[in-house]
Image (tube, rainbow, N blue to C red; front, side):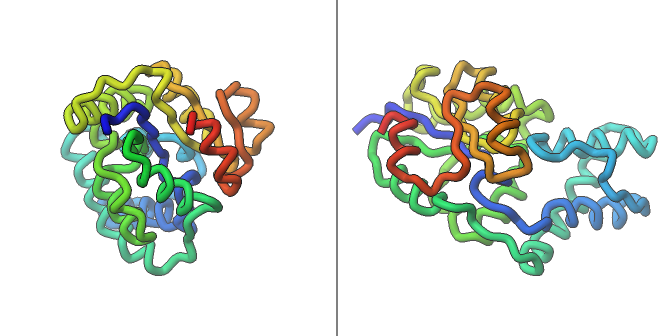
Length: 228
């Protein structure tokens, strides 16, 4: 059966929580590469791309925001991410295992990632929690530092893999921040907001997502929202 529905998942706060492994790896990697301790208090992280976070941190400390420094930043972060994932008490979020397994089994549904993670960072996280096999492609911070540009990359990769130009009304973006809602709007997709991250249902509602859930534990309700 040809694919007709594209469902794109954010990772942190939507699929899983790493128990702070990501933020700790950012701090350790930055200190290791640049000799600077940063508590991240002045850095917006939720819903931002790793490349955007890198730009914020480098600029804040007066370091050049160029390819050399960005690569050093990413190298340091990724070097510490794997060990931190093993040391932290993270978990998959409620309902996510059942949802992605159900969607994966539907031949007309294409599953992908739309995440602010670097591709290698996304792979480390998903492998650690045992859900990497469900996602064949995605759009990542490697593609662009502006999250609102990532949907175009995800659509292009879906076209390359499945030979289908998914119409906007058949694309769903699931995420836990207002930035995910805006990102969905940027490609005309339907925004499914889930309050399993750092934003409450009330805060997310202010950004008028198409669908809003406290978590993904009500499988039938979520599938209905996704047109299933």
